Image 1 (cartoon, one colour):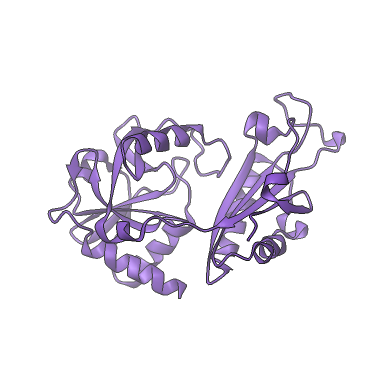
Image 2: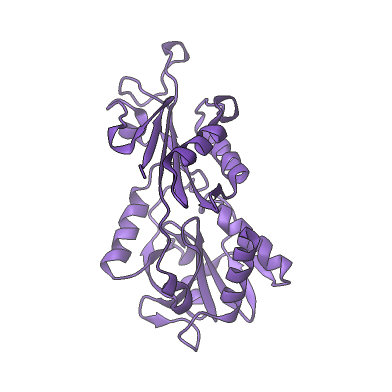
Length: 284
């Protein structure tokens, strides 16, 4: 089955898709993106992802009406064309192609956004990791101050993820200059203490994750107390449980941060496992 690409109205095999070298996404990271995963062939959280994409476009003042453009229909057509059992869909919209200068292209220049979409077969983390948990390492949070915008400017995230890979870890847990944990390089982070969940509040320091919101709703439905407040790295190291969340990771338990084991059992904790089960039930 082919991996599908879509660029400005044209579908093609992914290896044949091209964009201009003067695209502002390539030269300035002047663009935004979304990643969706399917369950039973159906893209999960479609409307939530579209709303977040609209917000990101608005924050960067990229003029692209994704509803009028028909983006949802294009996503569904791309999934059908690819034909995978489960798909990972990447959507990227940049300000467009223009001569290289820092300022936005003039409205009179006729520059229009570049819309790119790819569909690949979905690959989730190893199934055993959900039963045994994963290791993470800590890394300084070197990102800019508007992490609430899902931009393609991900170099600090890439460097942190590479640090984790070189350490044999699943993820890098980002820690700001005051010692507060913000989130993972590509995940949201949570700690559990005395049966209650703590996670970083929304703001410019983290992305408003679709999976994060789904897990918090599930926790409240289960009667689990949720605190959206900052936590220090020390709080994470002393937590009963830690877990991460993301589109491909779903909800995955953490059993070690750097050289510190989390909890007393060395295994995923009961709140983490209960919440994961509730999340998967929501998707069935």
